[in-house]
Length: 317
Image (cartoon, rainbow, N blue to C red):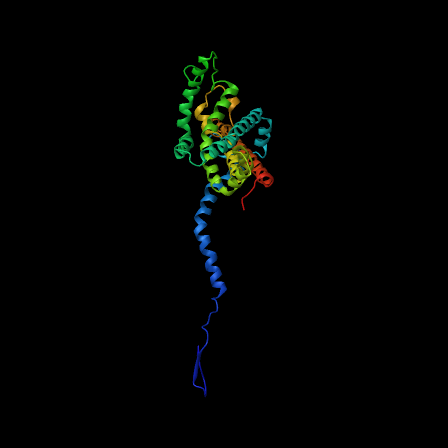
């Protein structure tokens, strides 16, 4: 805006109009675009996760006919779950498998720390070797381990015969079959755990190790006093993911033992029990109730982990 001072002949220019645009238009523009960008993600989650969850919850109160169609039966499926002795055994099998799977976290912590030492040659090759079992197909790995576990010509029993021990039928004996599946799952999970922990090790300041070395701390003391406490965020993440994957045990169990294995009824997991009810005996309402039980157990353990992590997880500022 330009104004002229009369009598002085001086022309002055005022500051340009710097008022911000109307907040209503700006806010609406900023508010709609982010929603439009994430709408496909929300739509996918709602369509493939939330809606099936709602359907499964509804079907858990129904009974399916042989040729389709549902009949509302209330809580009968859940009452049957409480009275079915195989449910408790399946929960116990799943918990044992998950606990053995959790052993992979401290094992991976030790290996990741060893591979993170300065000057270690071929460290990348070692990491790749550890990670390969995780990216391989579980069914293919199970086929190979079937040969390893074979009672007659397997590597394990052949090695035991050398020292005069006759090995058992690893995947055809009740408790040995569960341990065999758990060891295979543990072996496959170590590589993924190491990758996550190696990333966490990169975030630990080197000055802490240098200061502790000047104070005379040994490498073992540094590991337990610096490495482990500052890796607790990564360890917490892995514990949550491992527990969830442990309670979803199915593919390794199915591929290694098979549904016709005589020990399967005593070794089955909750998810395999769901598969058996849904696709083998056509009891989809009962299977939906099993799925809801799996969901509640996983949710309860996950919430408990998030509550307890405040007491033992340490974050680097």
